Image 1: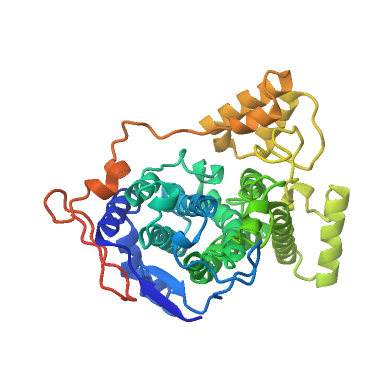
Image 2: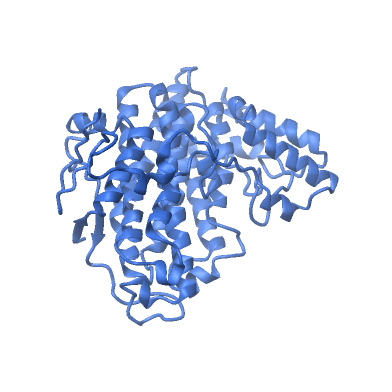
Length: 458
């Protein structure tokens, strides 16, 4: 991979710096201790990275074999608007993830856990910055009819509750969410980035390989702590149990499945050459991969509890637990992690608002379904506005007042307040780049730098 680094114009750099001041105040702390926690890795760089070795020829779609577009003017109006929607959604996820992680960051069990999450947040910031490079390095307005400033400000104004995808509108209940989110939702990100490596718009395709390389660490930030927690739980540690992890999985896996879009869609992305898989195919591969992850975690849990058993005996034991749903040699069925059924707790797509149990069994009565949710989801999440709105909608669906299709369109969304105290909504034009008003944290802007950004906070 031959990577070139570049930066966005200063007024957008300053707008990002202002956003960081309000949403990610620990970034300088990560820079200070980077060498302590990541001594073998290159210093953090808040910059855009482009893989120069990316193919110049379209690899999928109606124009396979033709040259890739290097500028929006080489795209049709339909393609430009479609790609802009993808870029906007991608940018929203990156900044939204930082806002979610920040809430429970200080509840981390150890400094290592904290700094691993801080690195994830910093790299999500870089990925958001990368999407801003897509928006600011070329002129999209003639085709899309939207000004660059408006597109950037739109993303910077988003808060938890007003992001594009629902997975990024759910606050974390505990640090368990912090970890499970990284292992489950960031895995969706891996799939999206992999599919987009073929993008017919070459600058976007060039952005994917560097982001994928960093995404691998994000997955580890989820998987490694879960392995550690389950091994400790197998030895009797009662602080973080398999039941707690399972409830967090039940919360996030449905949202992860929905991030691929409706199972019946994705044709346009393939036709335009923006992705190489349709929604259902990608979602199925993702579902199977998460199931393999849980299988591995269960084996680690059982090996830690039964150290004298052979790997073959552990595999047989796990199969018996899952098949019989009973206690085997002192290990209960509810101590084993299970994949939530793909139709469980869905708000979008084909299974939206079906009332099925976490294991896929139909539930006829809506109040029984609501009670089931209360048993299998995190207790703190049940007290959220998101769940209150979902409960009200599923009751309306059950009574026939609202169809499943209409309920999916009305799925819970908490909009940003118009009187938000943070002026990030007008961050690009609000920031005084000449230093006349507020003293903002400044991002290093040396062209081509590979070092970490320096912030001078007031």
